[in-house]
Amino acid sequence: MNSTIPFEYILIRYFHDPETEEFLNIGLVMYSPDANFFSSKILSKYGRITNTFPNADGDLYRTFISQIEGPLNKIVKKINHVHSQGLLFPEKEDFISHVLKIIPPNDASIRISEPKFGAAQDLDKMFIYLFERLVERHLEKREKKSRSDDEVWHFYREPLEKNRVTHALMKHTFNTPEEDFEFHQSWKNGKWNALKPLSFDLQKAGSIRAKAREWLGAEYLLNEHAENLGHLYFLLGAPQIDDRYLNKAYGDAKSILNSLPNGKFQIIEENEAEDFANEIKEKVPGIL
Image (cartoon, rainbow, N blue to C red; front, top):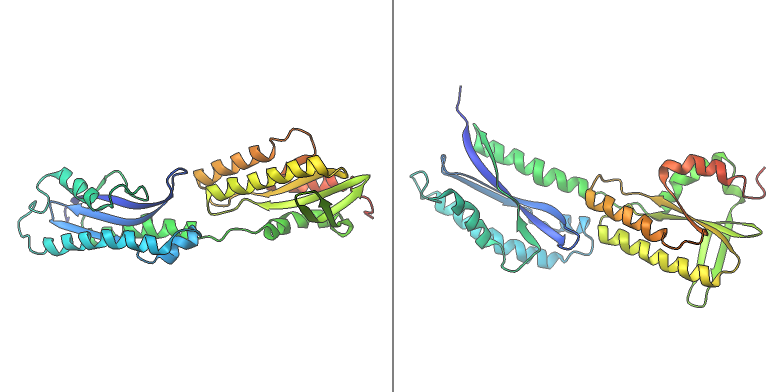
């Protein structure tokens, strides 16, 4: 049986927003003093970063990567000339400290993970496996496109159609001194009521909160100036990625939308779509 070789590795991470701690694993560095092995790889195509974070500065990211790749490649070249084990990094901690020196100083956007350890018979194959599992596969999940408000409406429309609600809905505009608000799914029952699909299935936690704050502003304007407003129902689309930062931001968004305690504004979530359709059909006139 072939013996395994111990190794250690760290992940290089790109933090798009240091405050919200949103990040992507963009690189892997692996080292084994026993085998005199050192390998590194970093995502160089910034288009994949901007797919996940649309307002990321691609040119700036490319500058970061060029500052890191050069020194890492020098280590790879150096190790080819080192024949005795342990000469590249005489002490274990030198591996981490050396990589830290490569990271651009005073830059919170590029960081490294805590060191992790393992053992393998083939270090090259293990490196490929770890890069695919920890960098590429994770990135593929985060590259999912956001759902639009129209796509969220499509989800809610089906149970509403079953209850014959949609054919009775019409367009209505609420006028305020600052802005006019047009809703395409509205009905009048004494006062005007409206449905507003809102997608919070977004790629950034900050965007989720910002969209909620934008609609909180709309709530204030409608509450103050739209005297003919009955109820406004927000039909929410939650993040589909199981990401704790996005989920936390979605919870914050719901709290923001619920912060105006007057009963005119109500949020509906996707797991409530069927019950809501059954409930709302009793309030919409003209349903046969």
